Length: 321
Image (cartoon, rainbow, N blue to C red; front, side, top):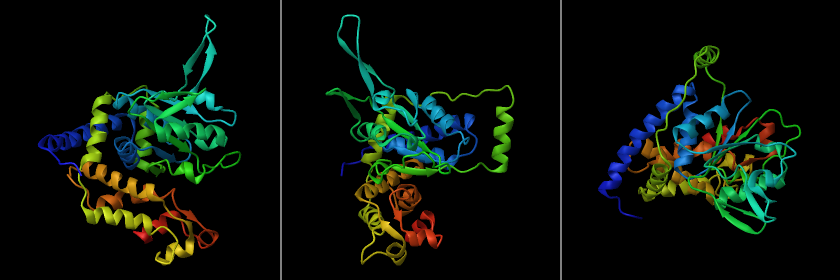
């Protein structure tokens, strides 16, 4: 574990101030959705990717666009459809006027990628996104291309209309740090949204951070120390979701599969970032619990008995916690 210097202490304080400024800028455009914004920002600063699940019309695209403006990053939106090909994401080679092959970069060559309705496209195209998410690079026609950091994929999924969709396989879901549920706004929030969007007034978020600062804070998140008991708690928590002889009764009874080691990693990194945004220099067990539901939600697979008894993923996670 690396030593924390006085410079790091200053960086932690600075990060807390920048995070609050970032929240204020995003709030100029996005009404409410504080938890969703918090988890998207935590995943960016943790070098993770985020899956947003919610019905259409809850400003998921606007949220990503606003965050990219406030972070001063390039933004690409890819609308996933059944006829989308891998080359539509990665790019393709064309013959130029000199009869030479020239690679034209696809929308994946951006800092923030919005993969809209990711479950609407066939597995072949979904897999094209996989390499980019994991390796931060793409391969096209035998050539390897590095993606510029910071690189972050935010995918959306509609939970209600499942006809004609290709559900993401568990291996691909595991690449996402968080699965964040986007809920309907409260009455007051919806009132504010309607008031703002039906008048001739437009708000825009100002740039708060540069790419260099984001990379600096991403490295800071990894650098902050974590106590052994908190580390053990995170690893035990992920282990408790796996059905075996030591598993809690609710897990043995209702789960087919539990979370893998990547869940333990994301619980720790997420807890570190959660501690930082709250002005703490080291995460505690409460920070692990704060990110647990979003880390575990898409990594545990319920069995038929859970569905028959009406046991939701949320209920199982809260019992494990």
